[in-house]
Length: 166
Image (cartoon, rainbow, N blue to C red; front, side, top):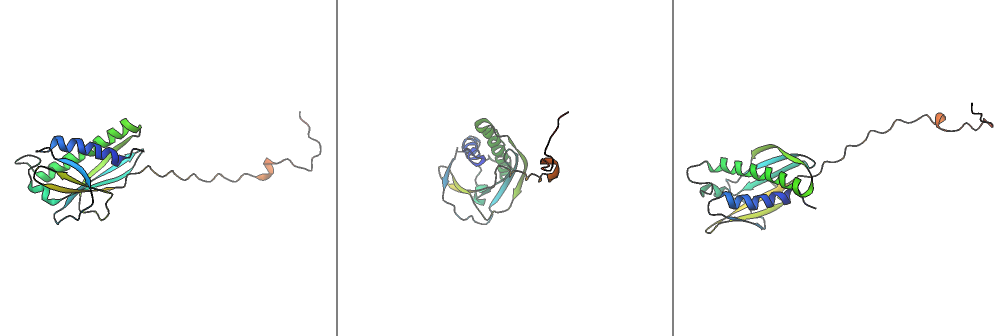
């Protein structure tokens, strides 16, 4: 079953290699602890799927001009990761018919739990990217219990031996 995270990985793989200088490659890896200076962004998704997907980046990535010279690297990462989150929602719709949208996108601190880990590899360096996926199908709403019916009105009164129909 295709998940929002699967779609995010596909969109990130394509968009990061296209948008970043040196065309680095995103590859899955084992989680590695991040140094101080790590930063991240979270997309809150709503629709047929809902929840939050957080992406934490190695702070050392800000020292490399992957977004180009003379630009605010952190703000540019935010814009690119928002684009990835929105592309993932579009890919999910195209592949599964499930509709969702990015309702909120914000900068965050660290995350203590990780769903998947990746390395963004360039020719001379690699950086850790951690992802926490909490996007799921919403839980069905509990139905209110039906009011109890008066049993007298739903059963035949056995004291009437003959039933006449007009």
